[in-house]
Image (tube, rainbow, N blue to C red; front, side, top):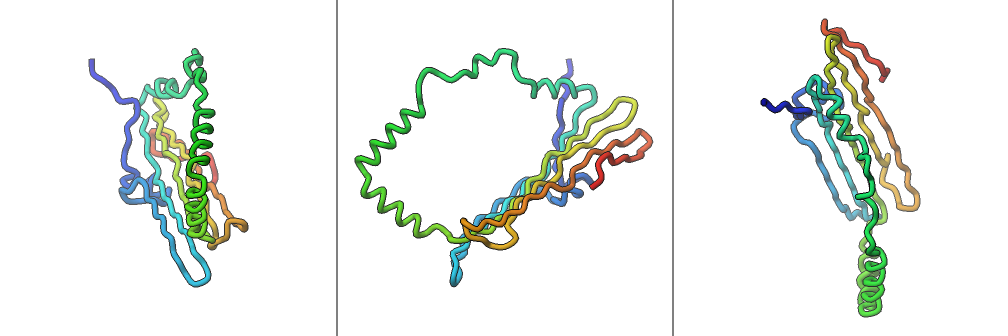
Length: 186
């Protein structure tokens, strides 16, 4: 018999939905970490961009896809083992402190001296864009949108000013005649 795909992944930059998320092009993710030493401050800049992934569900396979996310009936295989790995790690850490305590303290002080005193954060994470065919009616498109975490300006660790936004949430139906209905107002 012929195999059928449950989900088809397409690059976000080649579609109108990906362009609406504001992350065009073919880059799936971008990470930039920069330490800028300026007069009066040692600044750590972190920027992350994660583009949306488009998922096109093949008609008739939505139930099979949802089955993947249902929890298994028998959860006993996820029970913790008899060994206590946490206590083993704690004991090993105590042994290291006893044998190398003075050197560890010296290294820790050097690390603390080099930690930036201010930071700037700009993280943008786009949720997947899911296209679901609706037999004899058309299709539906769903996306939670774009989650942004950012500091408006560089800030100190004890004076954090962080903005969190969720924008461009979409729930859209398209009829077989091509009529679009937005269920959520932007």
